[in-house]
Length: 257
Image (cartoon, rainbow, N blue to C red; front, side, top):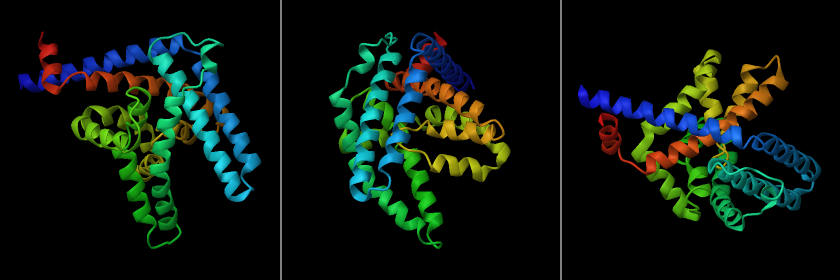
């Protein structure tokens, strides 16, 4: 019983520290909110302009999304480090981040084609949702592995799997709590939202979930979703580092001290 109590106390302390870190980091790095909105709006503009241009248009949209995601990861890393976001440093382009995201995208692209094929057949739609749900779980921390550890390619995928295997309770409990309000609309809705998660931008599910919850007030849903999504990305970054820097036994020992 003492061991369980120590573990729970250590876990609560871990979450508390991550909450404080994310709140302070977002307060100091508040430009992250309008910057992320601007980046998403620019992506929608590019997608609208080039969506009807076939393969070339799809290539342009894909590269644009990776470039914008590279900038977002860079801003997120600065905010996580409690670095002030200024007009000068938000324009910095991180080539290493771009390369890491590009490599991960090349690996994930064939998997997305498989999902698209499965969803084209009514008899295999359920398989596609199971497949995307498995990817959403096993690759959930890949964003942190890229923008914090700067790991890329297959190494990032293997690191993600290893991290989930070692920390699945601590990592997914906050995500489950974050998605709990969707249970009001049914478990199927929550599972569908999670299975639709983009591994490289996992908190898009937060924005879409807030839109579902505030369906009658879409503007409020989007704004609150963006703020919550950025806060949660900073929370995840803090939690990721703390989980990587200490084992279950070490955290329980520190809690007892």
